[in-house]
Structures are given as structure tokens and as C-alpha cells.
Image (cartoon, rainbow, N blue to C red; front, side, top):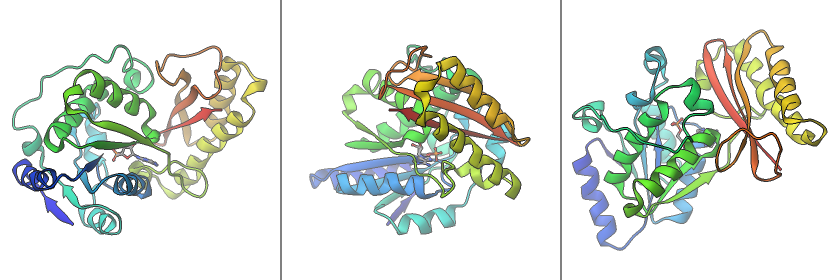
Length: 281
Ligand code: AMP
């Protein structure tokens, strides 16, 4: 496994791969890796000759400075985990390497960024698009892998690729959510939870699972109300939003179309913000 920290170095390796006619898969991450990230890397390993994983905590996507400061980082552990999966090159750039000058670009996502995460984390997706477009321009992969855990992000990355980066011809693959044994969606932020908060966190997926299993008995308003109330019953948990949206437009729906609709939530567990989603089948 090769570790590179500069664009120049990375491009040198990628040129060798491309000149040999081999394919490249790319997994962008912010590190503090867990089995969710590793599953994306394994998917890439199956589809491509070579896999590049990037580790970069992107400052421009944090709308909250404290959140950026306390975001978990553990490079040594990340590298050890990547050695256990099909990762060929790790790219770990510095902030200066990625942003030699301020990135002033703004992206238009045709409203996809105005709901849910975009509503509560202003500018977040613009920052995501800044870093992902830079990384895509550097790596120019055949395929890039994202988790359904970040449901809205995946839709925005597809839009970005189709509307701003179509020349690069990158296929976007969205992989399933990897969960802990008690159902909690794996997330780097879970490491910030206290033992008690970690126990509370299981109620989020438990409640979503319960109502996605029998959603046909309720209207969308009733579902949102019941899910919100049941999660908020735990004193550590505070729902920021529950939304039931169309999978493509991300617009709130009043009528559920099986297989085309998803319930998304954001919940504060203490001061740690967690997100999750379940498809309505
Ligand atoms: P992050 O490091 O949080 O930016 O995540 C990097 C990539 O891993 C994103 O595409 C996430 O959607 C994906 N990811 C994070 N958690 C999970 C999970 N539990 N299951 C599957 N993919 C995940």
C-alpha cells in the first residue's frame, strides 16, 4: 500500500496505472475509519484493478468550528485498517495541499441542498462539492464509492458529477449502510459518544426500523410525529428533523411510493449530531 501526501506524487502513480490500461476506484473519506468505510473500499476492490482511498478532514464543509476541531482523527489506526482491505494507494493531503488558495466556487444543486442537512448545515454541501470536485479532478477515477448513510450527499454527488464534471465520466456507486450489532449506523462521530449516549443512540435505528416495517398503517404526518416523539423520549436524544422524501428529488412527500421513498433523520445525542435513513419498501 502506497501512502502519498501530495497531488504531484499521487498523479505520478495514477499515470502508471492508467498507462497500463488499468481501472481505478476511489473512496473519499475524512478518516477515523470504521467498517462502513472499509466496505466501500472492498466494493471498489472488486470492481477495479486499483483502489485509492483519501483521508482528508475538509474544513470547508464544516459550518461549525467546534465540530471541525473535535472531529476524530487517528491516522495510524486508519492506515492499519486500510492494510487489511483492498486499498492500493492512500492519499492524505494537508489543508494547504488541497486549498493553496481560498476556494470561492459556489455550486447550484437545483434545490437538492435546500432540504434536510442543507437546511440545518448551511454551506455544508457547497464545501463537500468543493473538495469532491478537486479530488475527482486529481484522481480521475473510473468509479467512486459513497455510502447510503449520507443519503442526501450521495444525491448531490451524482448531481455534481452529471452537471459539473461530466467530462470525467466517473460512475458513482452508492453502497449500503453498515450498522453496529444494535442497529446504530456506523459513523466516525460515534466515537465521541459517552457510554450512556452510545446506549441511547440505538433508539434511533430501532424506531426507524419499527415504523418502516409497518408504515402502511400511518399517514406521513403521523409517521413523522410518532418517530420524533419516540426518539425524544430518551433524555439524551433530541430530534433535529424527521423527513420522508422522494429518493430522486429529495422533496418531502405526503404519499409514500414503495421503493422510491426514504425516511431521513438527524438527531442530537448530547452534543453529537447523528444521521440515519431507512428506505420504505
Ligand atoms: P466520512 O468519512 O464520514 O466522510 O465518510 C466517507 C464515506 O463513507 C461516505 O461516502 C459515507 O457515506 C461513507 N460511510 C460512512 N459511514 C458509513 C456506514 N455506516 N456505512 C456505509 N458507508 C458509510
